[in-house]
Amino acid sequence: MASKDVLESVYEKITNEEDARACKAIDESACKEVPGNFIKLIIAQFFTNLGDAMINPKITLPWILNSIGAPVYLLSWLVPIRESGSLLPQLAIASFIRKLPLRKWVWIVGSILQSISVVLIGLIAMTMQGAVAGWLVIACLVVFSLARGLSSVASKDVLGKTIPKTQRGQVTGWSASVAGLVTVGIAIVMLLSALTSFEGNAYVYGVCLMGAAIFWLLGALVYSRVVEFSGEVDGGKNGFKEALKQLSLLKTDKAFRQFVITRSLFLCTALSAPFYVVLAQHTLGNNMWVLAMFIGASGLASLVSAPFWGKFSDRSSRKVMMAACLFSSLIGLVLFVVSWLVPSLLDSVLLLPVLYFLVTIAHQGVRVGRKTYLVNLADGNKRTSYVAVSNTMIGFILLLMSFIGALTQFISLEGLILVFSGMAIVGVLMALRLPEV
Image (tube, rainbow, N blue to C red; front, side):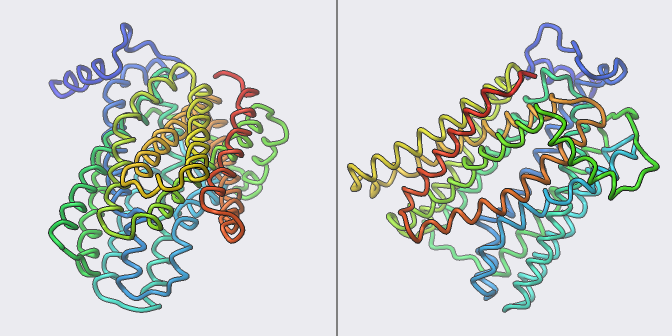
C-alpha cells in the first residue's frame, strides 16, 4: 500500500493536474490504475532506452564491426536493418496481437528477445573476427529489430488502454528525457576516455554489450507489473489475409492516409541529422572528443526538450509535429547559408555540435508528437491497425528515402541537408490538413 501511495505521489507531481484521474478513452477500472501504470511505463521505457543507447547503430555497432575486421560495406546496412526490420513486419504482428485480450506480454517477449540478441552480439565481438563475425552480427541485429517490432506495436496499444489521452505524451516525453540524461553520461565517459588516451577493443565492447543486455530484462520485469485489463479481441481470422486487408485503411481513412504521408515527409528530420556529424568529421577531424560532443549534444537535447514536447503534445500533438519540423527545416537553412556565405565558420568547434543539438531537439518534438497523435487518432483494435499499417509503410519508405543520400555525389553535404529541409517544409504544409485529435 505504501508503494502505491508513493507512485501516486510521484505521478501527481509529474502530471501536475488538479484532477489527475480525469480519464478519457479508457475504462473506469483502468482509470484507477493510471498513477501506478504511468510510473511503471516510464521506468520500463527508461531501461529499454538505456539499452538502445548502448547499442546505437550509428556509433556502437560500427565500432564493433570495425574492431572485429568485418567488411566495410556491412556498415551501411546497420541503420536500415535496425529501423526497417522492426517496422516492415508489423502488419502480421498486429494480426496476431488482435487475438490477445492482454497485450503487455507481447512487449515483454520482444524485450527478452532483444536482450538475447545483444548477448549474442557481445559474444561474437569477444570471440570472433572477420567477415563471418560481421555477418553473424547482422543476423543478430535482424532478430533484434524484429523483436523491437513486437514491442513497438504492443507498447502503443497498452499505452492507449492504460493512460488517458491527456497524459500519453508525457509518458513518452519523460522516458526520453531520462534516456537523454544517461546518454549525456555516456558522452562524458567517452570524453574522459579520449582525454586519458584509453582505447577500447572488441573484447571490451563485447563485455559492455553483454552487461547492457540486462537493461531489457529489467524493462520486461517492470512492464510485467503494469495493470492491464482485457480489451477487444479479433480472433478466428486468417492472419495474413487480415494483415493485407488492413492496408485498405490507406484508401478508406482519409485522416490516417494524410498522417502517413505527413509522417513520411517528417522522416527528413531524422535522415538529415547524421550528415551534421559527417560534416563535422570532415571539418573537425575523426577524434573521439568530436564524437563525444555530438553524443552529449544528442542526450542533452532529449533531456531538456522531451518533457516539454510531451506536455505540449497532450494539448496538440499536431501543432508539436508542425513546430518541431519547421524548426528543423530552419536549422538546415541556417547551415546552408553559413556554408555559402561564411564557410570558415564551419571550422568552429561549437557551431556544428550546437546546430546538431537544435536539430535533435526538433527531431525529439516530431517523434513525441507523431507517437502521441497516432495513439490518440483511434481507439481499441483500430489503434493496433493504425500503428501496424503506418509502421509497415514507413519501413518501406525509409528504405527508399535512404537512396537520397546518393545525391552527395552531385551536391555538397550542406546542399543535401537543404534538400531534406525543403521536404520537411512540405510535411509541415501537409500537417495543416490533419484533424486535431
